[in-house]
Length: 424
Image (cartoon, rainbow, N blue to C red; front, side):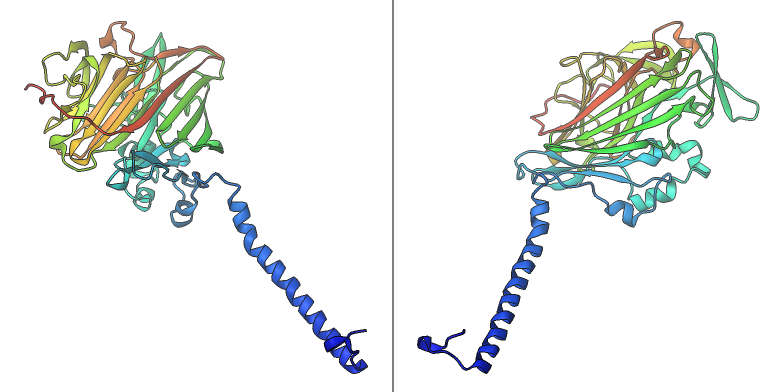
């Protein structure tokens, strides 16, 4: 029985009306509770992710065509230092083009987010990386971003075939033939055989301060150009303090093979002012070359135009570089090359962590606002007769053996500069 005011019973027809009203109120309250729960559930799911870490960005794969037949991948993290120090924010990778490190971004105090690699937009890159015309053999890959160079880095000279398509050379009595994809005053093979290779088994791994992408390229015999079969595994790790990359080559075939690994990243001079940008290369020797062709002789840098050993760096000014540096003073076992831009209060450190990294090729044409810092195993033309038996950095991998190339990129705020430009 439903009672009215002061406990007096209500007539039966009014009790029925009150009952309906109470039922409606109960249903309304239930719906409000359910609605509140639905609104809060996305927030609850979001809180399961670390606050300093964002999921892999899919924006690029939505707005840009696949490059090399595979989606573009972007590793991302959120800035956590509130502008108190430089920190990395993202790494963009091209799995369809040999895992090319297409772009790296960072947050620089007082400047905000900037791009560290000299690359076009993804839309422009998609129009260039088409595996035909100038991009035949994947050549456009080493004109942007940071291409990985396997199973050799830089130029390989040798005998040019009559049709002009192939360079032939020898390794330990075995004939090697490569596409003649390099053009200059001489034809040559250049920058390895994975420029347009497709990566497989891609996996994203979340970490406390960023993300890591792993992948595999089952290179086999590199399209019939190599002596044995090879698997390449990649790990690119993004954190606030560093971008660290490991490339591991394993001989999965039945005979011994030569192996060399390198990287071709075009690091920008953020201010665009080359005249005051500074370079530090802790090398005692360079490979002598005529028109980019090595003579087989090494030359000391001391007192000459290639002496970049000053710790705070030497001004680039108008000095063009396409030079192979070697015989390094190592810091904690690592080769540390530094690029600084005093006008921008910016410093970048490229650390070669693998003992097999024997040379660093530095490429920086006059007038260009970038410096390519190429940590690699081998000298230019590592199979050439001009080296007369010298160890040129090529590693011999027997069946089942592997070797790793590992490089870390870090940021810093440069200190005062006090080194003069190199002597002419």
